[in-house]
Length: 404
Image (cartoon, rainbow, N blue to C red):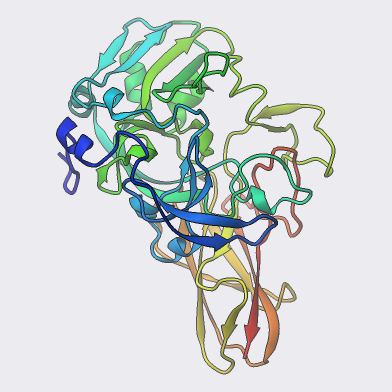
């Protein structure tokens, strides 16, 4: 067993209080910087107080100050996003002793694998990768759009451990003509008229994605609310594909037309995934990979900074897997820019730290802006782009400050 991991038998699982959402405690509230942004901070099992967007299904956002603590987001602070009212599944269907992952459909060899068979039958690997909700920062969209009104905390970076998705697919011997791979978790809709949450990838993409079937997160078993006992990790792809409580993989020889692929989770068929505010796209495609994003994490909006003293600005940047080439920082609201120093590289799918020493000399109001560029030369727009689903925000963010 990997050093630092914690085995979960049924006794420990039940002891952790993971039967339901009993024992939740209202801790405080937080004010997010957009309309109707007052939200409760609520403690769920295995979690510190997080920002609650919805109760059923639970949507929990990471308080933004967490991202200044470490490049790896602690498990107890990692955001939570479900889609179905019957989520998360109860412990009775997550018993690691009876859990099985099935691989079926257009394959030469159907598989039914226990967790131990996965661990022992395939090479164990790790990847550090960001999981980001497609609608991260949706609350900042103007004009406003429907959906979970999150701030910037529907994302997190973790060290994931499991086995390669490609290795498991190859063990099942995909049949000639296999086109797509479907992924299904153990969360369920409350009524049969609501479609189950199933996602699909082209077989070639699934084989080449670098995806993992992961049972471990930051050296510990997956938290209940983050997919225990097994989840799909798809580096560089939006979290809609990171199926939690994964129990079924099915290969098919035709395009899957399930609700959560079409009409849900689609973006304008445009290089920047945008249309004019208030309009609808003529054509759409499924959302796939992250665009480039960057944030200042060491100071919050309205912070007071002393003049004449050096202040170390710090933040994070990431993209869909090309890797961050440079981060530019403006301390005068965009009039001039300086290159920041990049910190340690945990991998091309991870948060990349940046720092810049700043010694302000003039008192008054100003703002810090941050713009990242990846190794493909892709950057961030200075003005926000809009689409009717509130997906893929990656504008250069502005943090107002006061120099004393």
